[in-house]
View 1 (spheres, rainbow, N blue to C red):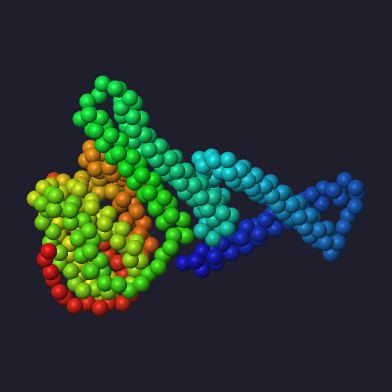
View 2: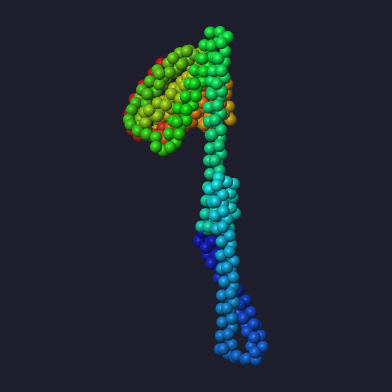
Length: 361
């Protein structure tokens, strides 16, 4: 198809060139005839044809020069527009959209303009995310600071009972812990996104790691009398053990937090070809379709009231998503409101040692 377009363009150029030469020859013949009559010179034969041909060359050269100058001016205007657009983007104005000269995919100048337009859109989106990030950080930090400041002032009241004093101190301690957690998570996320965070994959037993995480969180799920059902294959994986430990801690803590008393959490791990899939399912409060779309975004809180009482920052699942991406895996969520939530995590297997052994805790 491209070859046909190329030959069609060549044919059109040839036809235009031929018609232009015929027109120039017609104009040259009549103009030179008029000039010779004015000066009373009469060329015949070869000399007459030569003057006509020279006239054609002069007309062709003048036309080509005009087209070149017009094109040069137009191109210069485009370059000035591009330079101006880049200058505006350098100053933080990303509302830039340049008009393309043509829709030809092989037009390098058009590709440059498309690239600038795309860069402006991407930079604009990054700026929007930066502003939103700053706004969210400011809001998250301001909330516990306001509480700490308010209750610290209340403690100055000498007429407070000991019970209220202890209550206010407990709130200050809780908000301080929340502020510290926000700071730690922000530093963690920033480090992960810097491309300089230590990443040290090694071979280890993934099933043992998951069992250890469940045991580490035993006080949390025992307090709510949650039934933990574990069905794991013996699988050896090559990954960063510390980073993946953070993944399981965050996801399982989240499931425990939003599962009702006497609820159930099921952890299932299976190997499929060159991947391992881990499913963490709970029968807790669930998520709406809209909440599922944003669950891995920074500072997104599906349930504001529940997170506020549990000291969440909305960064835990963002950290999880980043760590899974670093391992070239995927994480998805499937949920039904007021019924269940299932986190599905898939990781590549570099080396597998499996032995089906299902256990129930």
